[in-house]
Image 1 (spheres, rainbow, N blue to C red):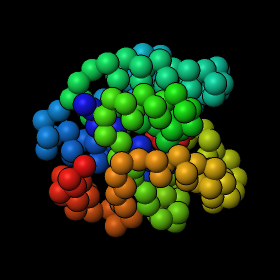
Image 2: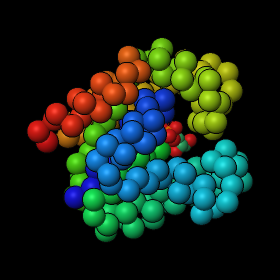
Image 3: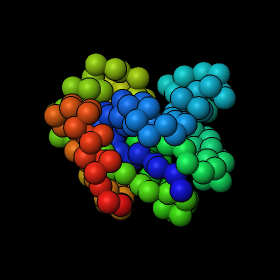
Amino acid sequence: MNIYLIGFMGTGKSTLGRVLSQRIGWPWIDTDQEIVKRQNRTIPEIFASEGEAYFRDRETELLKELALRKRILVTTGGGMVLRSENRELMRKSGIVISLTADRNVIRDRVARQGNRPLLAGDELEQRIDRLLKERAELYNEADIQIDTTSGDIDAAVRELLANPA
Ligand code: S3P
Protein backbone atom coordinates (compact mmCIF):
# COMPACT_ATOMS: atom_id res chain seq x y z
CA MET A 1 0.00 0.00 0.00
CA ASN A 2 1.03 3.60 -0.62
CA ILE A 3 0.06 6.80 1.16
CA TYR A 4 -1.50 9.59 -0.90
CA LEU A 5 -1.87 13.15 0.31
CA ILE A 6 -4.61 15.04 -1.49
CA GLY A 7 -6.13 18.47 -0.88
CA PHE A 8 -6.57 21.95 -2.22
CA MET A 9 -3.64 24.18 -3.17
CA GLY A 10 -2.07 25.68 -0.07
CA THR A 11 -3.23 23.00 2.37
CA GLY A 12 0.36 21.95 3.07
CA LYS A 13 0.66 18.72 1.10
CA SER A 14 4.32 19.17 0.13
CA THR A 15 5.37 20.59 3.50
CA LEU A 16 3.75 17.72 5.35
CA GLY A 17 4.94 15.20 2.77
CA ARG A 18 8.56 16.13 3.34
CA VAL A 19 8.31 15.71 7.12
CA LEU A 20 6.16 12.59 6.99
CA SER A 21 8.45 10.79 4.55
CA GLN A 22 11.41 11.42 6.85
CA ARG A 23 9.41 10.20 9.82
CA ILE A 24 8.24 6.94 8.23
CA GLY A 25 11.29 6.42 6.02
CA TRP A 26 9.34 5.88 2.81
CA PRO A 27 10.36 7.40 -0.51
CA TRP A 28 8.40 10.57 -1.29
CA ILE A 29 7.17 11.55 -4.74
CA ASP A 30 5.40 14.84 -5.41
CA THR A 31 3.43 14.55 -8.64
CA ASP A 32 3.81 18.24 -9.53
CA GLN A 33 7.58 18.11 -9.05
CA GLU A 34 7.85 14.85 -10.99
CA ILE A 35 5.87 16.26 -13.93
CA VAL A 36 7.99 19.43 -13.93
CA LYS A 37 11.13 17.30 -13.95
CA ARG A 38 9.94 15.10 -16.79
CA GLN A 39 8.65 18.01 -18.85
CA ASN A 40 11.61 20.20 -18.05
CA ARG A 41 9.34 23.25 -17.64
CA THR A 42 7.26 24.82 -14.90
CA ILE A 43 3.57 24.16 -14.29
CA PRO A 44 2.55 27.66 -15.45
CA GLU A 45 4.56 27.01 -18.64
CA ILE A 46 2.89 23.64 -19.21
CA PHE A 47 -0.59 25.15 -18.69
CA ALA A 48 0.21 28.09 -20.98
CA SER A 49 1.67 26.12 -23.86
CA GLU A 50 -0.24 22.81 -23.71
CA GLY A 51 -3.39 23.59 -21.74
CA GLU A 52 -4.88 22.08 -18.61
CA ALA A 53 -6.07 18.83 -20.26
CA TYR A 54 -2.52 17.97 -21.24
CA PHE A 55 -1.36 18.49 -17.65
CA ARG A 56 -4.24 16.31 -16.37
CA ASP A 57 -3.20 13.56 -18.78
CA ARG A 58 0.35 13.70 -17.42
CA GLU A 59 -1.05 13.43 -13.87
CA THR A 60 -3.06 10.30 -14.70
CA GLU A 61 -0.16 8.75 -16.60
CA LEU A 62 2.14 9.29 -13.62
CA LEU A 63 -0.39 8.09 -11.07
CA LYS A 64 -0.83 4.83 -12.98
CA GLU A 65 2.91 4.24 -12.63
CA LEU A 66 2.98 5.14 -8.96
CA ALA A 67 -0.01 2.95 -8.13
CA LEU A 68 2.06 -0.07 -9.20
CA ARG A 69 4.71 0.69 -6.60
CA LYS A 70 4.60 -0.19 -2.91
CA ARG A 71 5.30 1.80 0.23
CA ILE A 72 5.78 5.20 -1.30
CA LEU A 73 4.39 8.49 -0.07
CA VAL A 74 2.77 10.47 -2.88
CA THR A 75 1.79 14.12 -2.62
CA THR A 76 -0.52 15.21 -5.39
CA GLY A 77 -1.47 18.43 -7.15
CA GLY A 78 -4.77 19.87 -5.91
CA GLY A 79 -6.57 18.79 -9.08
CA MET A 80 -5.56 15.12 -8.97
CA VAL A 81 -8.97 14.26 -7.51
CA LEU A 82 -10.84 15.74 -10.47
CA ARG A 83 -10.79 12.53 -12.50
CA SER A 84 -12.68 9.59 -11.06
CA GLU A 85 -10.05 7.33 -12.61
CA ASN A 86 -7.40 8.98 -10.43
CA ARG A 87 -9.51 8.72 -7.29
CA GLU A 88 -10.01 5.03 -7.94
CA LEU A 89 -6.31 4.44 -8.62
CA MET A 90 -5.42 6.03 -5.27
CA ARG A 91 -8.17 4.28 -3.33
CA LYS A 92 -7.19 0.87 -4.67
CA SER A 93 -3.45 1.24 -4.10
CA GLY A 94 -3.25 3.03 -0.79
CA ILE A 95 -4.56 5.14 2.03
CA VAL A 96 -5.82 8.55 0.98
CA ILE A 97 -5.29 11.45 3.36
CA SER A 98 -7.02 14.74 2.71
CA LEU A 99 -5.54 17.98 4.00
CA THR A 100 -7.84 20.89 4.65
CA ALA A 101 -7.36 24.47 5.79
CA ASP A 102 -9.48 27.57 6.28
CA ARG A 103 -10.01 29.58 3.13
CA ASN A 104 -8.20 32.65 4.44
CA VAL A 105 -5.16 30.60 5.34
CA ILE A 106 -5.21 29.02 1.88
CA ARG A 107 -5.45 32.51 0.38
CA ASP A 108 -2.45 33.78 2.35
CA ARG A 109 -0.34 30.73 1.52
CA VAL A 110 -1.04 30.74 -2.21
CA ALA A 111 -0.71 34.52 -2.48
CA ARG A 112 2.82 34.25 -1.07
CA GLN A 113 3.80 31.62 -3.62
CA GLY A 114 2.07 32.87 -6.80
CA ASN A 115 2.83 29.84 -8.98
CA ARG A 116 -0.66 28.40 -9.55
CA PRO A 117 -2.09 29.03 -13.02
CA LEU A 118 -5.65 28.33 -11.86
CA LEU A 119 -5.39 31.09 -9.27
CA ALA A 120 -3.56 33.65 -11.39
CA GLY A 121 -5.21 37.01 -12.03
CA ASP A 122 -7.75 39.06 -10.12
CA GLU A 123 -10.31 38.03 -7.57
CA LEU A 124 -8.21 35.40 -5.83
CA GLU A 125 -10.76 34.81 -3.09
CA GLN A 126 -13.61 34.23 -5.53
CA ARG A 127 -11.49 31.79 -7.53
CA ILE A 128 -10.54 29.88 -4.38
CA ASP A 129 -14.15 29.76 -3.17
CA ARG A 130 -15.43 28.55 -6.51
CA LEU A 131 -12.86 25.76 -6.83
CA LEU A 132 -13.24 24.74 -3.18
CA LYS A 133 -16.98 24.43 -3.66
CA GLU A 134 -16.58 22.43 -6.88
CA ARG A 135 -14.10 20.05 -5.29
CA ALA A 136 -15.18 19.73 -1.65
CA GLU A 137 -16.96 16.42 -2.16
CA LEU A 138 -13.99 14.93 -3.98
CA TYR A 139 -11.56 15.78 -1.19
CA ASN A 140 -14.05 14.41 1.34
CA GLU A 141 -13.89 10.93 -0.16
CA ALA A 142 -10.54 10.39 1.57
CA ASP A 143 -9.96 7.87 4.35
CA ILE A 144 -8.58 10.45 6.77
CA GLN A 145 -8.86 14.25 7.00
CA ILE A 146 -6.29 16.48 8.66
CA ASP A 147 -6.74 20.19 9.20
CA THR A 148 -3.55 22.21 8.70
CA THR A 149 -4.97 25.65 9.42
CA SER A 150 -2.74 26.13 12.48
CA GLY A 151 0.37 25.48 10.39
CA ASP A 152 1.74 23.19 13.11
CA ILE A 153 3.32 20.51 10.93
CA ASP A 154 4.52 18.34 13.81
CA ALA A 155 1.02 18.26 15.28
CA ALA A 156 -0.40 17.27 11.88
CA VAL A 157 2.16 14.46 11.54
CA ARG A 158 1.41 13.24 15.08
CA GLU A 159 -2.30 13.26 14.34
CA LEU A 160 -1.70 11.28 11.19
CA LEU A 161 0.54 8.69 12.75
CA ALA A 162 -1.93 8.23 15.61
CA ASN A 163 -4.72 7.43 13.18
CA PRO A 164 -5.68 3.75 13.17
CA ALA A 165 -6.54 3.78 9.43
C1 S3P B 1 -3.66 22.49 -9.25
C2 S3P B 1 -2.83 22.45 -8.15
C3 S3P B 1 -1.37 22.58 -8.24
C4 S3P B 1 -0.87 22.14 -9.62
C5 S3P B 1 -1.63 22.85 -10.69
C6 S3P B 1 -3.13 22.62 -10.63
C7 S3P B 1 -5.12 22.39 -9.06
O1 S3P B 1 -0.75 21.80 -7.24
O2 S3P B 1 -1.00 20.75 -9.77
O3 S3P B 1 -1.35 24.23 -10.56
O4 S3P B 1 -5.85 22.17 -10.03
O5 S3P B 1 -5.58 22.48 -7.89
P1 S3P B 1 -0.71 22.21 -5.66
O6 S3P B 1 -1.98 21.72 -5.04
O7 S3P B 1 0.49 21.49 -5.14
O8 S3P B 1 -0.59 23.68 -5.60
